[in-house]
Amino acid sequence: MGSTPDTPRPHRPPLPPAPATPRATQIYFVDDDELMAVLTRIMLEKFGYRVTLFADATDALRSFRRDPDYPAAIVSDYALPAMTGADLAREVFALRPDKPFLLLSGDLDAPGLRDGRIRHVLAKPFAMESLRAALDALLHPREPEPTAAPPTA
Image (cartoon, rainbow, N blue to C red; front, side, top):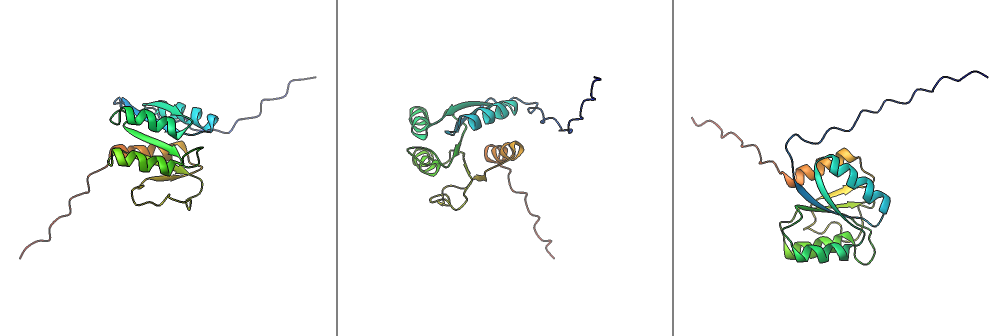
């Protein structure tokens, strides 16, 4: 028997490298799906973030209450045991209304998701680059471009 040629693998471009400037930005990532949590942590770390994982929103909230200034942002799944990600967001905003919070959900009509205080929602499933872009926008909001005043006559 002869050898068979290797079947070519589809070309997948590599993930973009982490930004040149170190972020040193701590993210709390809350998801009870262990595989999703670990894979997302790996990707976020490649993007330059430091990640603390929580499988339960109550544990994340307990840690946040100890030091609400510590994580630069919180990323949470919506569907969690004991407390939804939307409930976690409301608790976080009660302590720190300005805390960047990104909610992930496969159901964009889920109860409480469109609470006026929850401004950043990313639909699941998502591409890692979409998560990166959402976090960049959340943590580094751009100032609106100044509009030129109309010429005066």
